[in-house]
Image (tube, rainbow, N blue to C red; front, side, top):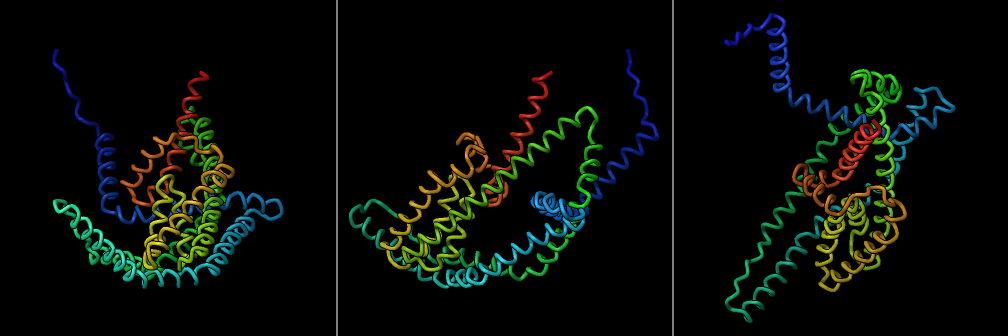
Length: 345
């Protein structure tokens, strides 16, 4: 039996050509599309955070006024917080950059003493030399990146302004937008998709709110502990520790390294006290703060968290480590509801 292949119809040729043209256009405009996608994602996150406050205002105001009031309230709170914290934090960050050479020189001297001590007792042991120039160059590069970020502040403000405007329209038309997204799905899967979306929003709001409370509490404790120990620039270092504490397991270590490194400039005794103070802060967080605020919200095993954080770090660095757990929660919620659907059949 001989198979006969039918030539493509005119409709198939047109569909294939349209797919190829769209793919070529997307590849040519991939930079623009990524910027637009980032803008839409930022606006979606802002509207997601503002939605509970907008619903609260809608009890007394029309929807557009409630959406505007919610965004203005969040913006005012953010600006007020930055007004209070940004000037001292910037001054302390500048102080950190100025103290880097002294800390690196002290660390280099200790490394040289350790190397000589080890070679005097174990001549066969060869220790590598501590390259203080390379370390200082890396830290200077990090500071230079921060300066470049400050130079692009105008562009950042423009993007944020566009996100705020888009978030306003998202809040005003959120039911209509959600309905249109729902209509894009197959009719048989719409109820399950709605359940998934509601469950994901609920869990993410609980998680983000809890993490912000924990980060704020840890920041306050870290600032107080570093001030008692006598480490300079305690406010900037405490905020860094609180922010990076949102990364499970690795965050406290990553956040504590700058404080210990700066304390080395005042001697190993100050560094040892800094390590002890930060250990006390982490014990308070692990045994009292996080369990009371977060509870068992995540519910992941330590092995799963470690794998997720490693994957996030490989993909997007520190930002990937911060967002690894929320992404895992989204995947878990979607999978759980998907399985429940077929268990009830």
